[in-house]
Amino acid sequence: MELFKRNKAATAVLTVLACVGVGAWIYQLMGGLAVTGMSNGVSWGAYITMFMFFVGLSAGGLIVASSASVFHIKAFKQVAMPAVILSTVCICLAGMFVLIDLGGIQRVWRIVTGPNPASPLVWDICVITCYLVINILYLHFMRKGAERAVAMVSRFALPCAILVHSVTAWIFGLQIAKEGWFSAIMAPIFVASAMDSGLALLLIVLSALNASGRFKTPKELIASLAGLLATCIAVDAYFIFCEVLTMGYPGAAGAETLALMVTGPTAPFFWFEVIGGLLVPFCVLVFAKNRAKTGLVVGASVLVVAGVLCKRVWLLLTSFIGQNVAGAPGVMTADGWAMAGSYAPTLVEVTIIVGVVSVGALGFMALASKLLQPAAEEETVPAATSRTSAPELEFDPQVA
Image 1 (cartoon, helix red, strand yellow):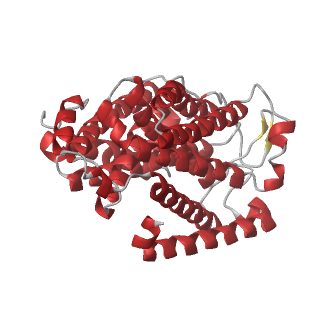
Image 2: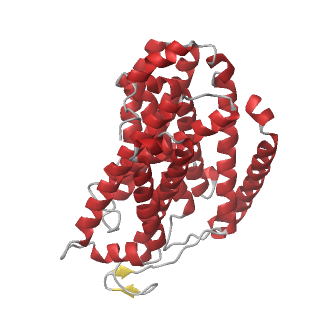
């Protein structure tokens, strides 16, 4: 395949990392989750963090692609194929992290034989399965050039993309025992961060494809998507501000959890997201002259993706810092068994995560090589065609 041939060194490195990751996973299967940093006190760790992260990256890509048909944004059709490829790869990686977190792959059958319909975890499995099917159908119909079928699938893809991250958020937002998770706006927070992180990753990938010569995206469209990214960043920041204000207002019940967020062990992740993942990228992308510079757009996009990853870390782990019930760690009290714990990912977890991401990169390269139209073919389109498509951009990159 072309991308593999052009990037032999990167392909070799990714293949080695993927193989090492598989080896680490086999080691985990043999030793159980005891080889990870998780415990009874902190039952979710790096794997669930990456699950949340990749679900968001996937949802953002599909929202951009489906908007082309649902809202008739014709300019977005140019990047619909790479967006859906990226979405498909990311949702597959998210599912892989769930299976890895089970500890034993032999437990998968329990999802079918013993589901709890009242559990948000079951809802999430159902929605993610439907979401993956929609992605596959989307790719199939786009490859066949079936415009009507693509338009029909898009009408299901857009709400499903929003729903898949909303249901993931409800896994946490409906947990009344965890003060840092229990929130009515947890779903909007997740969807907003999915939009900015997914769009940021799409911009990074489009720029990389431009550099490789495999797929060309007009600079005007890159600038337009960067303007949309600035808007998504602002919405994400607004929801975070609302949540922080509600938790920190005098007399509010969430003051202790907020103190842990801003000054506790997860504070570096919180402040990096606020400053590096929201404030700095917004200040860069809010100006049209900066959006016209691909290097600045890519740099801001990298910060956004890193910021959302940090958000997943502090959002998940802050609520594990406190005891699950009142009382000292490991002591039976009148309120029940108290359990508190600490967490840091082990080398096994890090190796598996790197391996899974490497598999995703190889998968994207394979699908892109097979499904994306080569840049040489795109250059045969008359220049007048690209000029006439400029007014169809949703955002004018020349407007500050």
